[in-house]
Image (cartoon, rainbow, N blue to C red; front, side, top):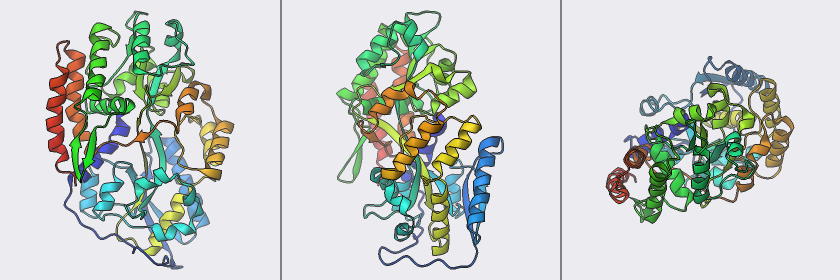
Length: 453
């Protein structure tokens, strides 16, 4: 899911420091100023490109509906979300939209550098925000509880698998492997089917290897980095880090269950899965529609189980934040827009109905951002309009809420690039020295983390 992983490139650049200091809007106490009655033009982004016609048109239809309901607010809509190549320059040049899209890796740095507006005092006027899961809203808060944005959606990683290959290999497609030892055994049985079938696939190129190393390390209770007294240090050069690399090495060279072709990146595993040649890999639910739409797969073929061993899972998400220095009128307009659509339980049924009618997937097992009544509305709507086989994802759904979700480390993309090397070595060199690979990576990652404050 590299397009999703690109989100962390921004976080890496921000954490590394852009040397900017922009005063944030709002004070820490007092009532929220009342917005003026005059017209407000709000610049927003997130518009899908015209090439994604259904999603583009739906976005603009919601803009029109919002403006019709809010006569004094005009939305100036910009295409795109968060491009790692342009975001730092836009931030440095003061060219960010008033309300702009972010990934969960980015808010902490933006808040610390005072590059976003505090909207806390306005939230009482938008009751739906009180039903956002505290652990999700915390991503957009400072250490005093000040809030600078709102979440839109979140995700966590599990084990994506081919149910058809499970059946052929004599495995129960309704009971995916629960541990990495079980993954290894299942991978051997799937690879034994022959004809180029791969039991378990993994990445090792373009930062995806380090990303998957992180996910697999979290799954067995490890950490990529820890903060000790304000100083970040690498935390993977230990028995848990060794366990991840050693199992992959054993699967690749002892079991021959990972296939001959290595140095894989994001699209490679999706292509193998769509072609019916891959049994399992670590992924998020949104890989499924991509496999179906781009790589000729079928929804009924794929299942999703919890991350093996289940001691932690790599997670993240996306949302919107408010540019520093916004007026009360623009902050109020931005909150109206976000709670009209993105952070709105009342829109879920309408959006699900539209998605179902336009053959967009409904019912994929993505963690919800809401609690209480709002969460119940979403669950009911997902069930009503589901057009994907939800029973295939039951093992993953049953684990949601039970497995701790951990976010990516600081300077994630730079760290992932370093760990790519270790992943490449164990998958391409049967004589690779796991201890040396981890030690070398630790030295480099500590240099990267030394810039994090």
